[in-house]
Image (cartoon, rainbow, N blue to C red; front, side, top):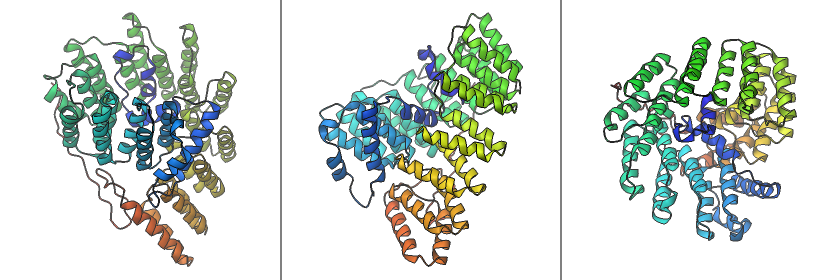
Length: 527
């Protein structure tokens, strides 16, 4: 993941394969880009809260939007930032679509690529595929210039994640014939299709598509790097090297990105010496290592439990006329932590602050993981409050990790504080976080608080899991709170009239036992 988070920053943008782990990385981008000014930030935050807290679908959202957002306030940056906040807050996709449609029909401005892509991503992430296709068709008719490779990638990647191999190919055909009308599909579109499978580490499917279509779409170095990155993410170094030699055999010249991928593959498997060997080979080929290359090696030194080499590499960054950024500091911090040098890792976090290098989601996640492993409850609590004081909203996996830690260690008040903090920030916490908190609260006879958290989740248009509902139902019955139980069940029933059926996923329906749908895919090799 380290390499993935850095690829797009390279000055060789034209040769970089689009980010492989698209859903996670895209989430980072849209939650951080186009940062508004302080005054605008307050207004964006206010509107986001209004939308996220709206009792949807019990009441229509449009009258609320008309009341709080005059048409003249709908600037391009305002719409983009609200949608970015809604994405980061895991808001219900239909609310985001309603807001986007409001901006589309009540503003004289042409919608931006960014606003359209964010809305599409929110819908696809929640598997509202019918609504997502409707949106693409509307944009194809009204503003066809907004249809880009990025919007194509968003849709295909999510279909690959939640639906079948055949569904992805059908979607690609639909885009070529019905959505991107007048556009001749070529190598770049072919690369997007391959990336959709590689994103989900579906390399059998990716190889099948490559074999089936590479005669129609001439592969380029970017194509090969996308596939190489897919093999790397699947964790198979042998497959990486075999495909690399196949790449060279086909006459493709490896570039810096190719080397970075191979170095990262070795580093993640603990084969640090092999990573250094490739690093030296790059320089012999007169390919100057980038900041991404050095950062990957620092991380690799940590995996190999070699903090001295990690610090040496970190020191070389400035010697190579590069500037260390957040990711480089995170890599060194991780290396120190793997060597159990917690004190130096904490000092490094302080150094970042002193040098005005911002802490990102990985900085906090790395330090929380470290403090939890050392059973430092006080340290976790101090860092948590420091994060909250800075109004930093962590990513989902950090939220779930913190919630589990608080609940397991009988720190339910901190768990509730985290939940309320996220809700106050306009976020809708992940369902697994609710499962953990609800279980902890009910086991300590705090069923009313569990009910309130569940109600907040449902009010924001997000479902709760079947096991969580069963636990809540049992404790509400024991407490004689039958009216509250009826209210929760009615909210779930109303919400299920809007939620799409889940494919390739366990359907958390209180009335239906979940079934796992396995995605079929061909088995074949690239020749």
